[in-house]
Structure formats: C-alpha cells, structure tokens
Image (cartoon, rainbow, N blue to C red; front, side, top):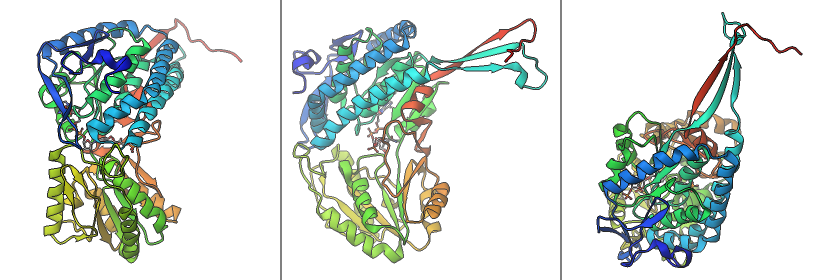
Length: 497
Ligand SMILES: NC(=O)C1=CN([C@@H]2O[C@H](COP(=O)(O)OP(=O)(O)OC[C@H]3O[C@@H](n4cnc5c(N)ncnc54)[C@H](OP(=O)(O)O)[C@@H]3O)[C@@H](O)[C@H]2O)C=CC1
Ligand SMILES: O=C(O)[C@H](O)COP(=O)(O)O
C-alpha cells in the first residue's frame, strides 16, 4: 500500500508526504501542504509538502556540489546503481500503481505497466549510456584545406550540471524517469518537480532511487504547485538544463529560461489520415486504441480522424461498434474509460462538445458525463469552424472530418499549430511515404496509431509541440555537451601501415 512498508518514511505525522533533499525525506518548513484530489471521488486523497524557496535554494546548492563528484564516478558504477533502481521500481510496482490509480485515475493494468516500463527504461538507459558515453571522436587536422597533420583533436561528452525535470500528470513516473535516468548516467544531478496530480507516485519512484543508494544530494524532489514554485525553479540560476513535458506552460518556460539547453515535449493534435484503400478494420482498431486509451489523455492520442469520403460511412460504423464495447467506470476495475484528471479538464472537454453541437456535428453516441467521468464520444461530420477540429481535448472525445482528397487531409494536419505525431492508413507504401514526408510532424506512423514508445525511439514535436528530441539515446546526448582537447605537435606526424 502507498506510504507503508519501505515507503513508510515518506509520510509525516500528519499524513503528508515529505519531499526529498540531501538524501532524506523532509517536512517543509512552510507548514503548508497541497491536496491531491482523486479524480474519481473528487475528494482529497493524498497531501504533499508545499516547499519554500529557501528549501529549493538549499537543494540546488547540493545538486551543484554533488554533481562534481558524481561526474567523477566511473560510468559502470553509475550504470550499476541505475540497474538497482530499475529492479526496485519493478519490485514495487504495486504501491506505485496504486498511487497512479488514486491520483490520476489511470486504469489499474496500465498503471502497473507504467511502473514496469519505467524500470525497463532505466535499465536500457544504463546500458545505452555505458556504450555511447564511453565513446568519443578523434579528428586530425590535415583533412581541412591548408592544414598539415599537426593537430589531434579528441572529443568527449561531458555532463551539463544540474538538470531540472518537470513531467506531466499523465505519465508522472515514466516521463520522470525518462529525464532522470539519462541525466544521471551522463553524470548530471537532478532536481525533479513532479506534477501535483501524480506527485505521490513520483515520490515512491524517487524512493526506489534512494534505496538503490545514489549519493546524497544528487537527486532531489521538490513538491508544490507549479503555478507557485514553477517560475522560481525554471529561472533558478543554478539550473543548467530543463527537461519539460506538458502543455503550453512549456512555451512560457522557454521564453523565461536563460541560455540553457531545453528539452520540451508539449501538446499535440495527432491526425489520422485514412485513404480509400486502407484496411478499415485495422484502422478502426487503431483509432479506438489511439483515441480512447487512458481516456484520450495521451499527447500521442489520435486527436482528429481525416477520412476519405468514399470510405467514411464504413469506417465510422466500425469505430462506433468498437466504441460501444469500451467499458466505462472505475480505474480500480481497470475500465477502459475512467474519470479525466480534474473537474476543470472535464469542463474544458464539455466546452468543446457544446461548441461542436451548436455548429452541427453528428453525435455518434449521446453525450454523457457524471462528475469527471465522460463517456467515449465520436463526433462525425466535424468541420474546420469547430473548436474540436483544432484544439486538443485531452479526453475521450474524437472528431472525424470527412475529406475529398489526400491534399485536404495533409493541409488540415499542417495548418495546426501542433506537430507532434500523425498516422496514415493505406495499403500503398509509396503513397504512405509521400504523405509521411508531407506531414509537418515529428513522427508519422504508417498503419498504426501514434505512440511515443518503445522508449528508445526518437520522440519529438515540431512547431508548438516542442524543442529537441527525446528517446533514450537522444536524451542522453541532449544532457551532455561536447568538450574537445587538441594535441598540437611540433611537426606533422603520420602513422604508417
Ligand atoms: N508531448 C508530450 O510528450 C506530452 C505532452 N503533454 C501535454 O501536456 C498537457 C497535459 O499535461 P499537464 O500535466 O496538465 O500539463 P501542464 O503543462 O499543466 O503541467 C506540466 C507540468 O508543469 C508544471 N507546471 C505548471 N506550471 C508551471 C510553471 N509555471 N513553471 C514550471 N512548471 C509548471 C506542472 O505542475 P503542477 O501539476 O503542479 O501544476 C506539471 O508538473 C497536454 O497539453 C498534453 O498534450 C502531456 C504528456 C506528454
Ligand atoms: O505523455 C504522453 O502522452 C506519452 O508521451 C505518450 O506515450 P505513449 O504514446 O507511449 O503512450
């Protein structure tokens, strides 16, 4: 159970979860806490500390100091500790999953999968890190015109320093470790600010790193509302890199952050283009999985279907039949559709539905909502003047736009301010490649729904969907900089065969 057994030391006498600094679990001197509302009951379920600016300053100082000695820790030893943390994450998947169920209403099975997937990510990162960080480059000067072979240049990847990691509510564990593990293997220290909904799951995950035995002060986890301590953290002079996943907040952070590397994975409006030769059963299955898993609260969810008019009726019927089979209810019961994360999110989604109704969309199901629970809804005959055609609901509502040419579909996709992923369904691979090239998105999936995983694949958004690229290898590289040492020889030197 959350906060018991090896996790008992995370909770203070008042039942508030502590924050993590100097290798210890601490109560904030603010005396204040932040409630975490269970999306299902809409009642407070957990509480976390509201940390102060002084507490942030202290852990930043420590992060700075500890990083220097961590950077001198052999790579194999860093990897060994990460492997231990990975094993602990998997061993403690039950309490971690329980937190995800209560804090973010993630269906029980998906919650357990997130914990296991996170352990796998950490292990892979350790293995990838020892390979790519153990290699450098060797350049000689006589390859550039006018030079003789008098200079040998050695390049190495060195750590950035203190990495600030800010993940979103929907994968508070997985999208935290996707930042923590690359940062640590590359010799950086880490300050984690988990999302408020999902903070307790993240604290349990941090405890697994604590139990693994990382040096004190190398990893810190500070809790509090992003709106209250966010700016203080992101503009802190000791932060050398920010890795953020979330919504438009990321754009605001990018404008305020100093001259430091940024990794931003932001929103998306992933389009699914269906051509008239597509396998409609395959497409329908992927639309339902892509559009409605975790109730549409994935950045990579299918967020608009663009289907050729000639196959639209058939496709919509197939999708409708599958939507009818989705179970709706409690995350504890592993229902397909569970309450969305907050009441304000449910209200926002409802606003999009009302707008579509007023403007004449076809409702394939009756709109139904109880509290934060919204029944899955497919909206057919959506037109570009409707908000749902462009905005991401982050909920179980999926618009279908009927198109009369492929160009119309590509045009709709590219007119979006987002550019995360997209997908195309066709049996013609040549057409699929041409469409993929024309779509202005970080990734295009051919004959499958968008997805970030597997976690070692590159993952990036264009336009307002982000800066930089994630995925294990890219994140490790992003969290390093290049250092070169040039050996200058008095005379040209050549190695003979
Ligand atoms: N491209 C991608 O990989 C992904 C994108 N997303 C996008 O994220 C959004 C939903 O996630 P959500 O968690 O609500 O996103 P938010 O942008 O609201 O929050 C993300 C994180 O930022 C924190 N935060 C809030 N305000 C600030 C601030 N001023 N400074 C620093 N940090 C701050 C939040 O903390 P707190 O919770 O305390 O407010 C949370 O930890 C959707 O738009 C979705 O598309 C989601 C997942 C993946
Ligand atoms: O945060 C998200 O929504 C994820 O990055 C999506 O990950 P997935 O596509 O692997 O579910």
